[in-house]
Image 1 (cartoon, rainbow, N blue to C red):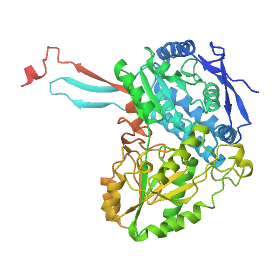
Image 2 (cartoon, rainbow, N blue to C red):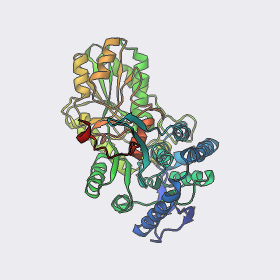
Image 3 (cartoon, rainbow, N blue to C red):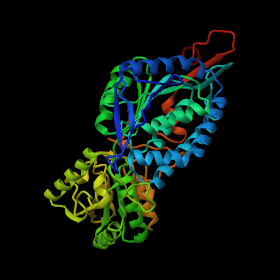
Image 4 (cartoon, rainbow, N blue to C red):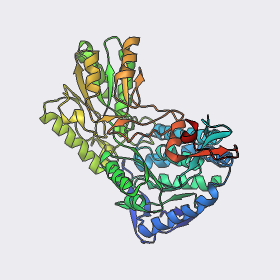
Length: 493
């Protein structure tokens, strides 16, 4: 069995705890991917110390030179794309065509971040005083603690790590305990690209290791993707310790289908949105809101298509849906299916573990659809993070939007309609950070802002130019060449 190590200060090092944990293939629990460090406070301290020291030189490197290194990161990810994709599929389960897409997001983000190092623009503004200039600059923040979930093992960390480095920060990264090898691969790529020692560090572990990073006094910023409950806890710590904090948390995303929609296109969208990544996306389509005039027709078409989805090991070429990540998540899917039935929802398909043949070896759950779900039901309100879809009837377009907004989350949304007026009303009225017209709730692009409102996040946006609002802070500069004291508002008015 392979044994892996942490990556600290440009070196592969054993955990000082001397402890390791097994990482298991969720499609076949007899397949142990490897042994990974169960790191502790001393390991975190070493990583933060190396990042703190490296920051002194890294921030002084001209930003376009940092961009040259990030360009190499993208090149190496591209060269190793298929290899790392297969590692990710074995580790977390989603089909290899999806993990290839995961890697492509990292490649896109690397190239985008590299190019943005020439566009870290500040602002100049006229002064209200004579012979005086006003300027502002983006400045790096320091050591960034990055903590991410399992579902996008390379793409999501790339959204944080690469812009953070582009801006001149250094990083201590803790991957999810369920995808530690992806973190190792990330470090291998950074090392080969020539990222200087200490600029990027990976500390592997489980339990409360994330809190060790968040609580550390020499960590200046936390960038987190994960559950809402954990995000709220980390946000409280950051508030108490005055750390800058970016939280990307849960979603309960709705797709609306109107009677004038292209039904075939809409069905394709909800199948991909609900069951892609086995429903384990913060942007997954977990609610389908259908106008009453096409409600039963859509349910019939959807059930027919969903029943044909092929479950299996993600490295097999015909697999469309992989396993959920672990036994606990399998139990969560079972629990919410049970609750939905108890609360009066109508089971259309699925609702149980898949145990036929090789599926019995892993954590497989059948694609599940419940109809007649009302907004007071838990399946309508709470995130499942699995292949379980709730279908709800809407009386009108306005009612559909009202239903879409009737949850505590606001990440992504989707409307299928040919009515341009309804489309623009949806864009205006749906409470979400992202709205798709005639496309599913998933499909973010690297050069556009990503994030949500309400319980989904704390106002920051990853992706695109907006990510640098997370990883920089502003310095304002006043240059007075009047050769006299000018007391701003006192002397000017």
